[in-house]
Length: 87
Image (cartoon, rainbow, N blue to C red):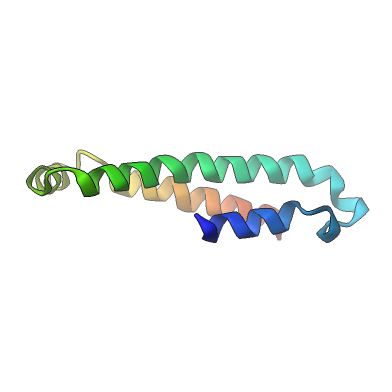
């Protein structure tokens, strides 16, 4: 989480934003919130799978029950959107 927290703190500091760019600050905040909304469920699911019975985790992985690819794609899409907007 520190990896995601530090850039968001930096991006939202008023000292790093020109007065001409303050109008996009709400959009940038929305992108950061979207990133956290994608990241937190992914991390919670990872923690829960770690503490689950490993045989069950293996079977769920075979059946693609947890759909890790879609959860990871949601996080990377949110990261990419934030990167585009911050650039």
